[in-house]
Length: 359
Image 1 (cartoon, helix red, strand yellow):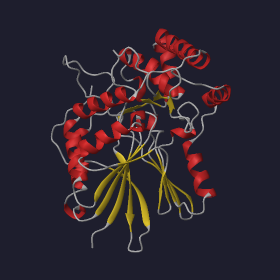
Image 2 (cartoon, one colour; image 1 turned 135 degrees about the vertical axis):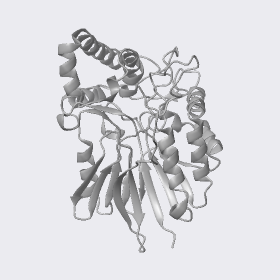
Image 3 (cartoon, rainbow, N blue to C red; image 1 turned 90 degrees about the vertical axis):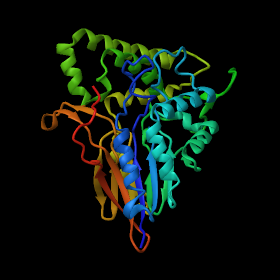
Image 4 (cartoon, rainbow, N blue to C red; image 1 turned 180 degrees about the vertical axis):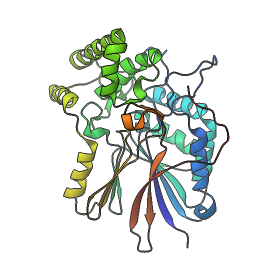
């Protein structure tokens, strides 16, 4: 009897490709596992999955609309035209991956659902959604907030953080502008104006964890860069929060919440527990955003999963130092009574003697 499965992945941060038109490496590209994901999709549309019902749920930050090109004049002004262009660049830069996603969508019983993350605000625009439908050859579901079904609650998790939360009552800014643009949260401006520049100097900057260990090391061994970075962060925060512009909105309340979270960052696991323990109907919560894969039994019959990310990281933890790649995902397997059972898995892919690596 064919089964029913839900596969949940997140945080691919796909840019416009590993290489730029001149042949140089793209410093803003984070995703180098096209082959692995292609194998993942092929595996789940063939063999024992060929006649099954399989839904791939992409839980935010699949597209990286914030980190496409360092040469754009106004990279923080994301109109529908800009979002569509950036999406097309991503589709072009990773064509084999999206060809396989198309084959997955066209397999009977298989479908894809996208959830909005803080890195892919282009999904808010109708033309971008239509372009995905055309690219994948089938209608795909796109949800701006959470996805709830069968006692399962799935959302990206950025809304729990003041610096990355969208104003859900006002996704777009229109007043005094020639066309609507995305009302980006402060964290998106920080990525665009600060991190994109830093990565040209230190490409590994966004991959390191725990970041506090790196900051201590940098203050001693890369002092000028560390002090300059701290100064830039303070400058961008003050500039973005306290200067007026028709291209962004801010509030005193949001500013204080961001400042508070610098020292006391809300734990995404705490938010998952809150949902599980206050909502009697919810048995499984799947979040992402934090980039740390996790599986927790919060209470009897109550499970929290974080799907991690499909990017390389650099660990400074003594127990796990060096480059780390864990292609993790959540799987919901339905039993004969139609009840989903959760698990956290790691995709290893097919054995290869040689593989290209991202330097």
